[in-house]
Image 1 (spheres, rainbow, N blue to C red):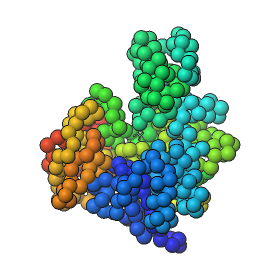
Image 2 (image 1 turned 45 degrees about the horizontal axis):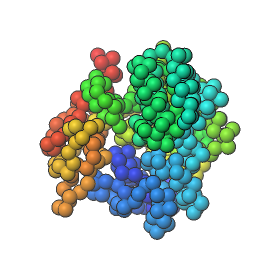
Image 3 (image 1 turned 30 degrees about the vertical axis):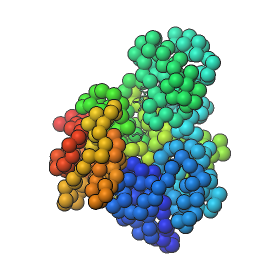
Image 4 (image 1 turned 180 degrees about the horizontal axis):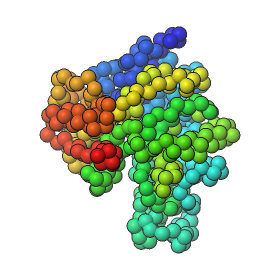
Length: 431
Ligand code: AMP
Ligand code: GLY
């Protein structure tokens, strides 16, 4: 690598950011990595500085004060607020799209219009704004049940309601448009046809029309085994997900990725960062459920370690516009991450409990922290709902899962809860 070494700032505090920091620590490109605000696990490996990530001015001030060369933005909120534009204006290289590009996550109405304009497969839908609740309720006549009601704006992953009946749908429409459920993020809504199929996460690292296609992953959003109980931020993931077979991959590339990247260029949007494409596979065809403009969490924890090529160098070349996708190599392995949560999550759960991690991890296992902080004596304390991610790699998904669960069972923590069936769809199919 011929570039001078980069002092790098990673913005965010979750498992995704810990995985990015771990990649930075292994990267030959990086002289020093700092995280803001980081978490207890990151603090054991890198300098962490306090930051409100929704404060764009404070982020720019921090990047300037620390004289960083490169910023990697983890979460969507700062991207939607324009942190990339503000940092670029100071001459800092940023991985993560500008405000125009971030609309693909920040506005589901923008995205739906974009998908329809460029004829990209997605669920049929109608859009309504504040004051149009009666029209929206009337439009339900054109849908069957379940039906999906979505707040257009950011809602921390909670803005999607799958309504089983007309009554539920009407309540969701009225409470969303009135601002009761998601505030201003619900000022516009989509009513959307329910797609019944298998979900997968496609991740590409984008630099204009160039991109690197990472292995397809599958998240497990529900708290309970066999996908039961309420939704969470994600209880585990694995990759590669075989449900995205060669034919679906080819269709995703030709019908989704290529028209999306051409469409962005046609709209004058210079996109440099991650595009996460949530797809539903229905009768062998992938349809777009959503775009995110950042890495998935917990998908990142399995995707970055599957790259043979240094992920940070890919991010840097995406940001600089010098990406050579054909040079990127993947490892022919499987990865799985099990999320360890505090019992009770996604409802009330205890915080501040001591966690003791096993001393010597096998070389194919890593632990990332999501919701932890360090106590006075440097001990690890739980500090959130999703607390740890236990990642393992193997020649098969089964091997990876067995090794990850051995480490999960060796963690000492009173309130630990994790799903025992991460990867079950694929593991069941393999038998
Ligand atoms: P979104 O934030 O739009 O991806 O929605 C969150 C979750 O809701 C997705 O991961 C899906 O599990 C589910 N979902 C969203 N839209 C639909 C749809 N049209 N049909 C079925 N499930 C959906
Ligand atoms: N794991 C899904 C997401 O990050 O939105």
